[in-house]
Image 1 (cartoon, rainbow, N blue to C red):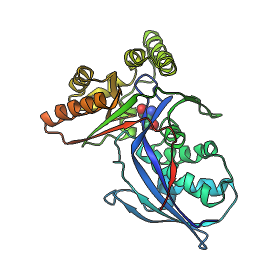
Image 2: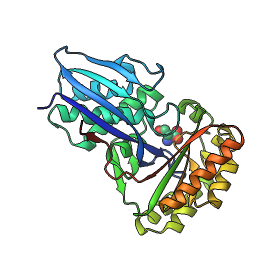
Image 3: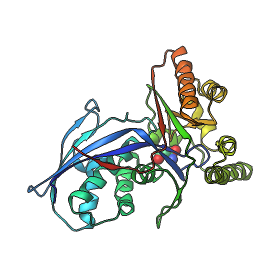
Image 4: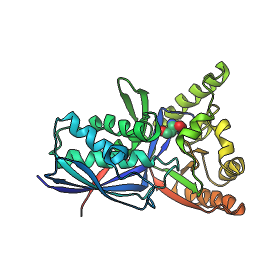
Length: 311
Ligand code: HSE
């Protein structure tokens, strides 16, 4: 049995516009990397975190990677000593599923080091518990796609019922991360607890149509279903020039455009890499016009989820 492993877990687009809290899509890049090694200490410790500018807790019980390992070991009734090094490539508070990616990479890593007693899908509750510790609520819309890859529908959280939705081959994802931070907690606090029946009808029609569009490989249908009347109208003000960003992306190759997770990252879906590059650059320019530095990530859909890196 190997004593050391390095695992990559990708960023993900939570909600995918209309699928508030129930849809998530994994991208190929960027992602977090977690290194895990076994030892005889009987403790789970975080040895170091690189790339977070000292902002994340080093206490294992408060860090999503540590929580995922602790919960995994609890479930198999092991008091194995574990040391974790976290390479935090994903920005914090970005809406790209940063906390979920660290937790997922850690859960996959410890499972493999312990001889894979659990199936990949059975690791999801550990990543969700880590999300609960980090954000106050246990959503699977980032953890599930980061773990399994692809587009995931979370039909039910308790008991977990998740469905993998096929995506068309030429579907490309664009993430544009403006250099501001929005905490998930704050982005949830602007939401209303109730919605009108009309908004409900619009939202579930679009969610069903988006899933149908993916399965039928109907890019036009995907584009016109990327509409969110529940969260986006209330969160748009948290992202400078969001409406301009969206209009510009739609004129420059995007099938649809919205807020990634709880923001401030903006995402769009495109047919083909060239369209995705164009849409990404057009969004970047809108942010630059208001002196907002940002990074663009263009990627295919990640179809494998988290995986061990050969070191
Ligand atoms: N679905 C969540 C939200 C994203 O939009 O608040 C974080 O899991």
